Image (cartoon, rainbow, N blue to C red; front, side, top):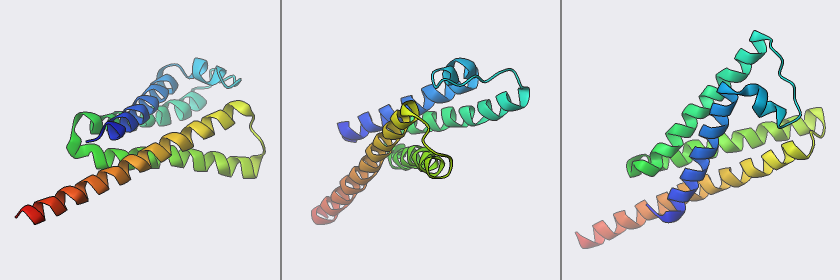
Length: 140
C-alpha cells in the first residue's frame, strides 16, 4: 500500500471517527460550532446521536484499511461514499433551502476534498493491484 493511500485513508478515517464521536457524545458543543443550539429534546438528540454513531463506525472501518492492507480497497470505497454523500446532501440543501453560510461551505469543501482523496486511493489501489497481477502473469 502506498503512502498516499495510507494518508488518504488515515485522514478520512480519523475525520469521520472524530466527527462521529463528537456528534454522538457532545452534540451540543459540536453543533454550537456551527452556531446552532441543539436544546434538550430527547427526540432531536436521538436523531443527532444515531447518525453520529454511524459516522464513527464508518470512520473506524475506513481506518481499518490503514492497518489491514486487505481492507484498503473497501475502506477507500467506503470513505469516498461517506464523504461524497455528505457533499451531495449539502448540494441538495443549497439548491432547495438556500445558502447555509461560510461554515457549511467550508465543511462542503473539506468533504469534497476527502472524498476525492478516497477516490484517488481507490483508483491507486486498483492500479497497483492490476500491475501486481500483470507482473505475476509475466513472471509465471
